[in-house]
Image 1 (cartoon, rainbow, N blue to C red):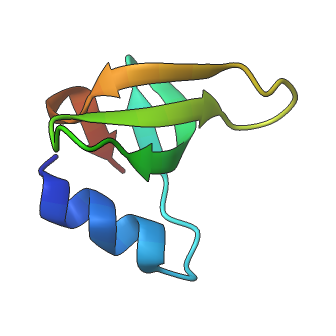
Image 2 (tube, helix red, strand yellow; image 1 turned 180 degrees about the horizontal axis):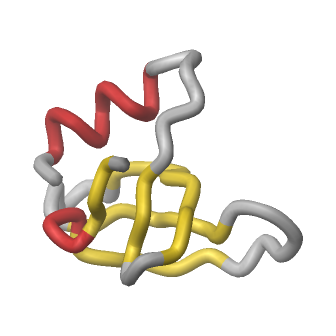
Image 3 (cartoon, helix red, strand yellow; image 1 turned 90 degrees about the vertical axis):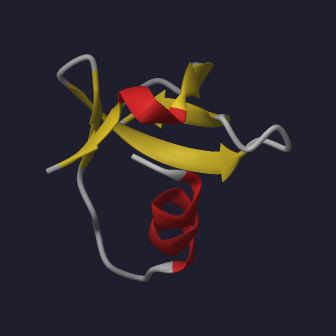
Length: 59
């Protein structure tokens, strides 16, 4: 995924499924470096992780 698509997903009102390592995640923000994003797992738990955006896959 690229930074422009991350921005589109963040501004969209649609429920767009994104996976990281095969697990569904919510994107919380695109980080200032433009190469990483903060995400958390869908469902219970609010643990946030910083991941490389090129590892995010839109389903």
